[in-house]
Image (cartoon, rainbow, N blue to C red; front, side):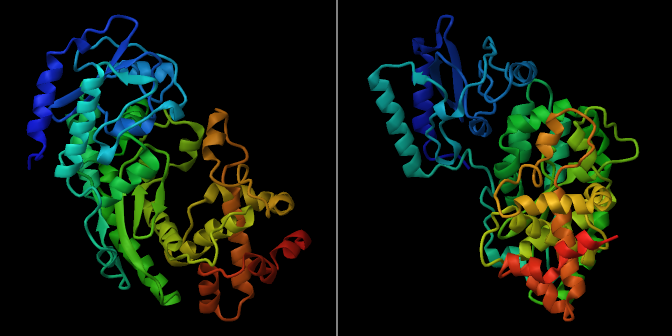
Length: 456
């Protein structure tokens, strides 16, 4: 379907092509922001863009690669940023806060110290065209199904047999993978993967991938690993039975359970899974390792978290428990966040037969008392940096991992385990862990702290 504003945009494009704005002398660096049949030249004296803009600007002929260090930018200039034949220069990254943007649904963006290389009359026409585009409601760039389109009740059910498991994004990814070349990959992954993706992929891209450049850069950096997981990602439906069985078990121990749509997709190796208010998204590339998958390209954190396909039911179960959690307050402190994560591990183990943090448990069992003392000293603070979501910091050290990241998962698990074991009404205990009213009270009633310090 063509955009009702195309005629306006085409006339603007013809005007710009006659303009001398394209003839920018060095050291000015032209950035072309390409829309369907319209391009806006920008004069950038101090380059750099907010990386979030790159999803819209994927194939713009940037002479400054947004959001990357110089060596990474050089990699990107080798593939995908040379289609328009513009000379490319790599400059140092700049503060993203310096960027500005007119971004209704990703239509128009501007970056850095950019100003349109045209006189005031032309600037006014840009604003006019932008306004007209809003009025006609153009959807050309938004793709099909950007917002999902389905109501919450269509994506969430109380019946475990009716929960949907969707893998179409994986098929789209591998089609894009086969079509991509060093000259077109940014466009292909945007148009043939991200843009046509499911509602789950759209949300995952917003929360975890960030932009198409991030995705392409990771695929190139870990090229051999991605190639090795193709067959296993396509076999994810072989785990449907085990996933569905864990859904049934949750319904048995927690009758109030809700079951969202589960989306499997391929991301940039920075998130295994996430649950939102109406869906679960799983980064399949982290859980499709084969016996022959090469790991030499991966950083230490990635090496520590990649798992074979058989681990996927536990990953889904962990995110499913997060989906159930309804606390009276948003977890903020180390104790609260650890109980949320550790509780998800504990209950997911009950329904799926295992939990996802083996390394943390192996280390924790060897250092339990010392970990508790350290945890106790900071558990009412909000500094999570040594306990939760610190895989990136561990990986950045570039050293073999001795103390693993995310040990808050282990401590939270052990508190929940102690609470459950002391409870006489097990169904109520599960409900209490999923609907925590008072985090301190749960800790006290678990008796964990005193027990671990007296353990011999």
